[in-house]
Length: 286
Image (cartoon, rainbow, N blue to C red):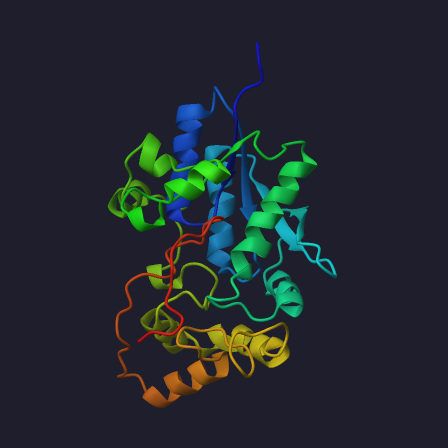
């Protein structure tokens, strides 16, 4: 009897991704070798880490917690194995990667690559899983068709369990977790890294009004690393949409006052950041 097919499941910390893990357990748990991984960027909300821990315990995933290890020169990030208890929670991992690559934005998109994709690839190699010997499952839903890239999926051996195994929408995900005592304890606008540059202006403004300290970390990153690495335009690199720096964003929100209502931006950051990013965000809106 041959080896069982392999699946590397990328649990990103959101509800959709958690349901994807449950679908994989239900459908393939007895027939496939599945490794579940969670890449901690150290800038997630603490509730996200609590949820990852709860999902692991309730579903019996044997979740592997990973963090990026930065190397000098042209070598990409590798991995270290951590745990719920030892995972960094104060931006240390994100800071270390920014120190090498500069500020992330929609042109310099190293977040997913260095904090997740390369980290997962490094771990896969460490356990003897060579490229081409496994599929990678990500939690994109059936109602997110613009994030489903069949060309990328075929090339990278990506599978979409919430599209092709079960047809799952956002409403299905919310219904599934409603009433669960271990559900993710954050609002939709709070998801992903705390003040991620992919979030809409409205979400970022809401986060600022909830607690201005949500922007302490990106302001610090800007002060330290704005001039690290190349740039596609003259001057220091800036993180946010419309080519705005974190200090500029905070100053605008503070000057606007509590009655300000930024325009709704459709798209951008969803509840979690998947390991293979396909959604496009306009850096210089018309």
